[in-house]
Image (tube, rainbow, N blue to C red; front, side, top):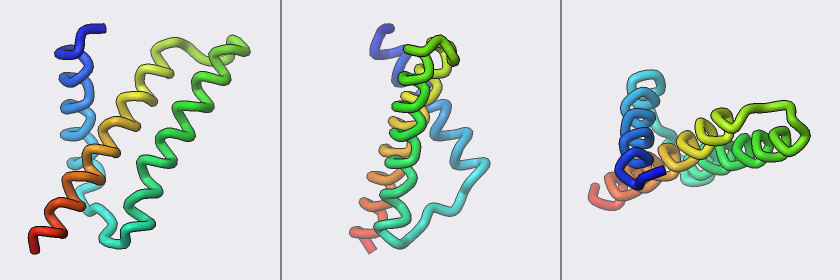
Length: 83
Protein backbone atom coordinates (compact mmCIF):
# COMPACT_ATOMS: atom_id res chain seq x y z
CA UNK A 1 0.00 0.00 0.00
CA UNK A 2 1.24 3.45 -0.84
CA UNK A 3 1.64 5.92 2.03
CA UNK A 4 -0.75 8.34 0.34
CA UNK A 5 -3.48 5.69 0.30
CA UNK A 6 -2.81 4.79 3.93
CA UNK A 7 -2.98 8.41 5.03
CA UNK A 8 -6.19 8.86 3.05
CA UNK A 9 -7.78 5.92 4.87
CA UNK A 10 -6.62 7.22 8.25
CA UNK A 11 -7.84 10.76 7.59
CA UNK A 12 -11.23 9.45 6.43
CA UNK A 13 -11.47 7.37 9.62
CA UNK A 14 -10.60 10.38 11.79
CA UNK A 15 -13.38 12.35 10.10
CA UNK A 16 -15.86 9.49 10.54
CA UNK A 17 -14.89 8.90 14.17
CA UNK A 18 -15.06 12.60 15.09
CA UNK A 19 -18.58 12.79 13.68
CA UNK A 20 -19.65 9.59 15.43
CA UNK A 21 -17.85 10.37 18.73
CA UNK A 22 -17.22 14.13 18.84
CA UNK A 23 -16.27 14.25 22.52
CA UNK A 24 -12.78 13.02 23.37
CA UNK A 25 -12.05 12.10 27.02
CA UNK A 26 -10.15 14.74 28.97
CA UNK A 27 -8.77 12.19 31.43
CA UNK A 28 -5.39 11.09 30.04
CA UNK A 29 -5.77 7.45 31.07
CA UNK A 30 -9.23 7.18 29.50
CA UNK A 31 -7.98 8.95 26.38
CA UNK A 32 -4.94 6.65 26.10
CA UNK A 33 -7.17 3.62 26.57
CA UNK A 34 -8.86 4.28 23.22
CA UNK A 35 -5.84 3.69 20.95
CA UNK A 36 -4.77 0.86 23.27
CA UNK A 37 -8.16 -0.81 22.79
CA UNK A 38 -7.91 -0.36 19.03
CA UNK A 39 -4.42 -1.89 19.06
CA UNK A 40 -5.85 -4.86 20.94
CA UNK A 41 -8.51 -5.26 18.25
CA UNK A 42 -5.77 -5.12 15.60
CA UNK A 43 -3.85 -7.86 17.39
CA UNK A 44 -7.00 -9.98 17.68
CA UNK A 45 -7.75 -9.55 13.96
CA UNK A 46 -4.19 -10.57 13.07
CA UNK A 47 -4.39 -13.59 15.36
CA UNK A 48 -7.80 -14.58 13.98
CA UNK A 49 -6.47 -14.22 10.43
CA UNK A 50 -3.73 -16.72 11.26
CA UNK A 51 -6.47 -19.15 12.25
CA UNK A 52 -8.46 -18.26 9.10
CA UNK A 53 -11.32 -16.65 11.06
CA UNK A 54 -11.00 -13.09 9.74
CA UNK A 55 -10.11 -11.40 6.47
CA UNK A 56 -7.04 -9.44 5.54
CA UNK A 57 -9.36 -6.44 5.12
CA UNK A 58 -10.29 -6.73 8.82
CA UNK A 59 -6.62 -6.33 9.72
CA UNK A 60 -6.33 -3.23 7.54
CA UNK A 61 -9.50 -1.79 9.08
CA UNK A 62 -8.22 -2.32 12.62
CA UNK A 63 -4.81 -0.86 11.73
CA UNK A 64 -6.53 2.24 10.34
CA UNK A 65 -8.67 2.53 13.50
CA UNK A 66 -5.53 2.24 15.64
CA UNK A 67 -3.69 4.93 13.69
CA UNK A 68 -6.71 7.25 13.65
CA UNK A 69 -7.28 6.93 17.38
CA UNK A 70 -3.59 7.53 18.11
CA UNK A 71 -3.71 10.71 16.01
CA UNK A 72 -6.89 11.84 17.77
CA UNK A 73 -5.13 11.20 21.10
CA UNK A 74 -2.20 13.39 20.05
CA UNK A 75 -4.46 16.06 18.55
CA UNK A 76 -6.51 16.38 21.72
CA UNK A 77 -3.41 16.20 23.92
CA UNK A 78 -1.90 19.10 21.99
CA UNK A 79 -5.11 21.11 22.26
CA UNK A 80 -5.15 20.51 26.01
CA UNK A 81 -1.54 21.64 26.48
CA UNK A 82 -2.24 24.84 24.55
CA UNK A 83 -5.04 25.91 26.92
